[in-house]
Amino acid sequence: MKRFKRFANRLFIVIFILAAFMYLNNSSLFTKARNQSPLLLAHRGMAQTFPMEGIMNDTCTAQRIYPPEHPYLENTLPSMEAAFKACADIVELDIKPTKDGQFAVFHDWTLDCRTNSEGMVNDYTMAELKKLDIGYGYTADNGKTFPFRGKGIGLMPSLEEVLKHFPDRAFLIHIKSADPAEGVQLARYLSNLPQKRLSQLTVYGDDNPISSVKKQIPNLRVMSMATLKSCLLPYIGIGWTGIIPAACENTQLHIPEKYAPLLWGFPNKFLNRMDSVNTRVILVAGNGGWSEGFDTKDDLERLPDNYSGGIWTNRIDVIAPLLKK
Image (cartoon, rainbow, N blue to C red; front, side):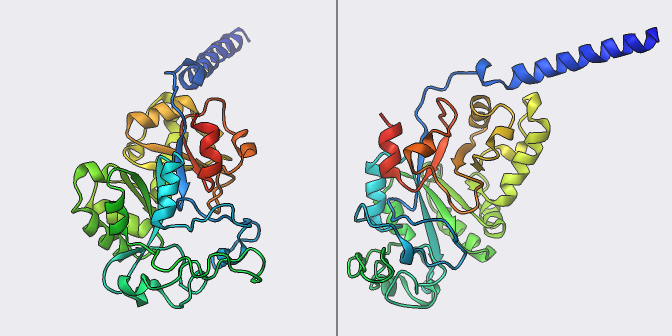
């Protein structure tokens, strides 16, 4: 009995010491102060927004927008200019390959929803795409009126145009396809850029094209579901020790707010650890299913006090004035 009691006492002491270590090693109370403002990522620039209820992969979101509060259309140079002027740190954009080997900046799988044409983007050359009206299909009243019809002609840019127009700005480039060949094509284009420019870019998307990009440009920051899991799953296992898995280095993490509290040291200790390995953390709203953003003042109330990591928003015009004071 005495041996059992001694064993139990020792076990209790060991557990207590381990618990104290885990707490002290991961508490944001005992870490380097983070006094900077949150990093703001503007999804598709300054874009028209829409209710997320009932969204599916093939939902035509242009046909369900809220009444417009500004004149900008997503993925255009004016929308990006407006987003940066509103204090966005990074602008997210979508790319699709064209018939003549360029990348058009456009979101949808087909042209049918937003434009006055139909078919796939790669059915057309970049010059032909420039002739389309990308504001043609937008409506906030079930088709009674189309407030952007006729105003989107010539507004679809190429990726090359965007990067030349904003030579010193940061972008998150979204490969919309699962085709690894698109990753190869993008990597071939990006590899001609100087290292300083590459350091301002991040590429994300499906595992296959992102793997292709990473193979050709190993030092480029990328993100896919595979890279996310390869970092976070080991981190959940060993992060309490302070060890950062190698897969977490030089990447980007889009973390749903629902799961962020499960990460050792979140927020400040975790953010500092990721900063130390050149990894950017972006917090997305909800469970991360559909590009949910922190888009209202009420959304910001859910953030940890003095949060200074990245924030995904669909309403940079609303959120930036609240955070970039």
